[in-house]
Length: 395
Ligand SMILES: Cc1cc2nc3c(=O)[nH]c(=O)nc-3n(C[C@H](O)[C@H](O)[C@H](O)COP(=O)(O)OP(=O)(O)OC[C@H]3O[C@@H](n4cnc5c(N)ncnc54)[C@H](O)[C@@H]3O)c2cc1C
Image (cartoon, rainbow, N blue to C red; front, side):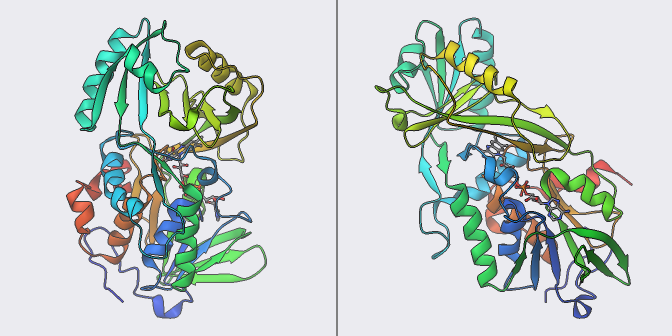
């Protein structure tokens, strides 16, 4: 087993591995936990413990499934760039369908938003080399559902892709299992204690699990999980985002349209197979829970979309909401806790956790193994310090 360097933690997490059933227990089986299990399994004895009956029940199963390299703060963008190669050509046998499909994303400005358009152009062209500037007529050509009389221009991000989130998530879980990882669902953890270099987890069914290394990949619950384990929370905030699907008009061909994103972040539409996904792009702070959409969220989105397009949304075909969880500075939290021995964070994925999962889990695995960063991370400009949990509690 690879010995860990001591640069980013005070103890060797593998020191007491021989006393435990698992080298590493990952709490949470969403995209974060599943992707890390896949990275570590085969080299280490890994278990995922998931509280729900399905690993993708919470945020991972509720995303808009869009890959946007321009999205998020600098560290997130680097992790997303580092993920592209894996998503374009995953290892043989990982998934039976492509994980990415061309879509494009059209960022839109409407009358009265001239300054916003100018600022967005400056911001997006700095991070998006393939950006195409379109006047209103050219933007309308790409998505004739837009109201041409209100539109003033668009910025087309050509590299934006649709992601098959289920194929990615299941690919990670299946691959991790094949490499020997255990995935246990319906798990309730009653207590967690650290003694003699090992964690002892007591489960609600009366059984116990020992491991030297606990990974906190519990999404919206990650600060609560930290408290349970005696680590200091980092100030994560879960924010509700609501979404719904609806039918396009009989004459529309939405599968040809790019994703349509209002530059003022008031709404977006993502075309799918015959249906459209809409969202008010809301980010309402809340507590960790099984979140449902507020009726007002959906009504707001419908109003804004109908104002900007000639689409008529009589009744959504389905509605849902999910929790996007953010650290105070918007970057993810990836690394060993500086004060709590054997406790590793993989949290704060915000609105980017799917598109960045290959890069984020690669980074997490390098830090856990104590190896240098992989070449793809280095090439993509990933710097571990940007994600370190130590940034919230400097010593
Ligand atoms: C509407 C919406 C649209 C989005 N669109 C996109 C997009 O287009 N592209 C993109 O990249 N991202 C998108 N996201 C964000 C993305 O979905 C998240 O960043 C990502 O799914 C977070 O993954 P996770 O594994 O951290 O969290 P989760 O999927 O929530 O997984 C955490 C898991 O931990 C489990 N858990 C919690 N506490 C415990 C415990 N004590 N013991 C055991 N298990 C526990 C939970 O049950 C849960 O399954 C979107 C999100 C939403 C809501």
